[in-house]
Length: 176
Image 1 (cartoon, rainbow, N blue to C red):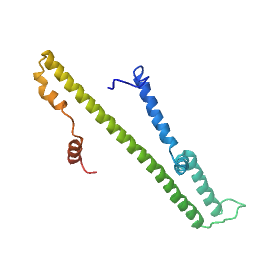
Image 2 (image 1 turned 90 degrees about the horizontal axis):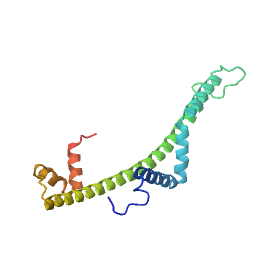
Image 3 (image 1 turned 180 degrees about the vertical axis):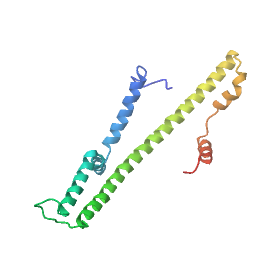
Image 4 (image 1 turned 120 degrees about the vertical axis):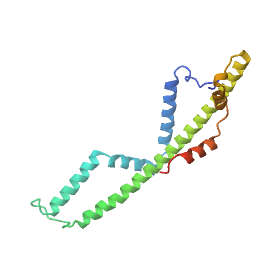
């Protein structure tokens, strides 16, 4: 770990980490463009039970009126409901666009988190490698016999080649 930890991290590291993550999320939310904000609001509403019920009421009501099942109301879109089909298909196009805008923003945010996670993991690996090397030297200096685990110690105290590791993973993981 770092010798100069940020203030508050040493007293309660869990709370410090929660606060840091919350700050990152607030920053990501505040950096959204106006289009992304509107898209997120629409996507949030469209993904609700209220929207589903509104759609159901609209289609059932439209159908009942235009099938002459509601006395006193004149049909305005006779079967096969061409206007309704136009409205619903246009709505589907626009909703798809809004969902894709939201998904693109979430994918970018996820990619940034993934890169941050990789960076933190690589830093942790480097720190642990340094600690293992120091412990190995301390054991040698103090005359502690580590012969039974020398092979493991040696392999873990070597720096991990990230490119080699990624290549090996790619070779062994199944195609999706």
